[in-house]
Length: 277
Image (cartoon, rainbow, N blue to C red; front, side, top):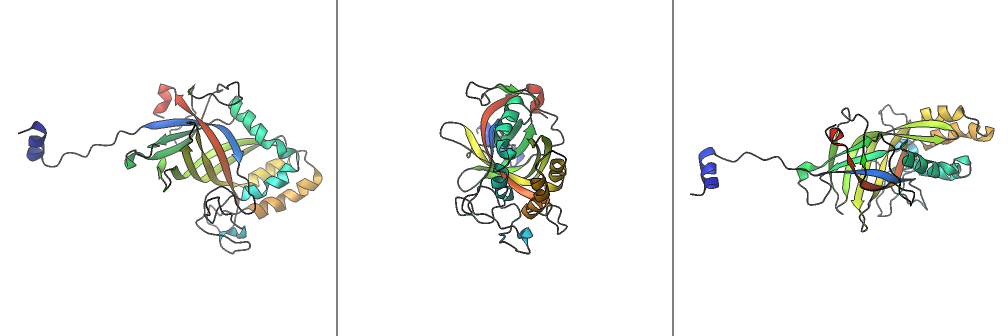
């Protein structure tokens, strides 16, 4: 009798073997805010409700439809971009690129079970924060293949990840921080209720979208302390309050604005002592 068969007969069913999970790390090299055009906008249904304008549920801020025809897309920040584009904040995205290149905004995605053929038990996802000044290529974007350090991630619990019906890697229910500068104000955006969709492009790059909500009150307070135009200062409270479309704490008051980030990423490695963080 072959040895493996004897072991099954003698010991009963074999023990379940945990899957060996491959984990990939990718750094955000390009970040753009999702924009709306004729009611179509990239993003996610973050609140599980298709909201029409004035709807008592879903905070009354009308949702978008994405390019695939999915309804209920929460991306209210897209409606603010035309207003920002008419001010000095039009330079926001170039500033964000500078922050990425100098390491101020260094977001890394930890993606286990990324390939579609991976064991379903491998799917887990985290957004980590880099603690390095990254290497930048002659094209002005992060170099792939570099090794980076990260901030302490022991408090960040991975969330489950899987593949959608188009084979794209998806995850929901995570949080991360985004720091930007608007009107000379340093803005800290704690993004919660996060959702991500990532896939590998034909040229080998990672591309995708990350969505979530941030509380607008802290943003407003910081902006009002800057030397911005008096008319805009008067307009901002009304505009931001009207854009709030998420009630993340469930108290019946919308205090957060949904946002979609369209990203491009490059494959990176972590220093060995950071991988287990």
